Length: 150
Image 1: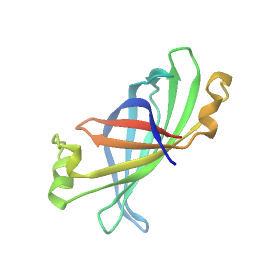
Image 2: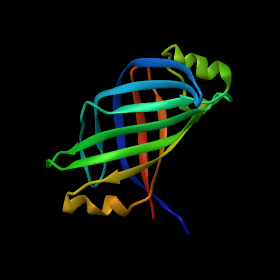
Image 3: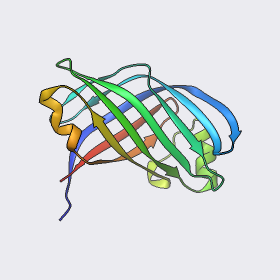
Image 4: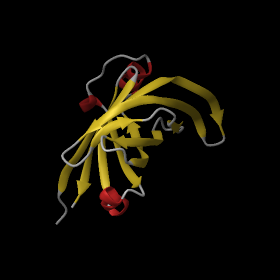
């Protein structure tokens, strides 16, 4: 039986979208990460600036998310995150998100699978843990709830 256990709430602050236009793979967008914070029962801290979401908008309108960034825990450990997933919904909802409007996340689908990598012994369990995430796009941020798959 699969169970989900809350791992952490993540708030990622973002730069404006850099739209590279239509490429052979779709519409490429790069959204730099300026920082943020995370908190959960077993770890908390800040998101370091310097990561980004290298997303592609497919011809069917689905955003393929590919965010990579670094967590710094409150006790000084560094954890690399590779968070891949999808965001899609009705055209008018996605257009509102693109304009930076606040949209109820129940109106669109935003799910991801974060993977972790760290050399910190106290967080080594993350290197072998499968997680899923549910997200919400804000005007200049993304909010995510990460869940550990038990």
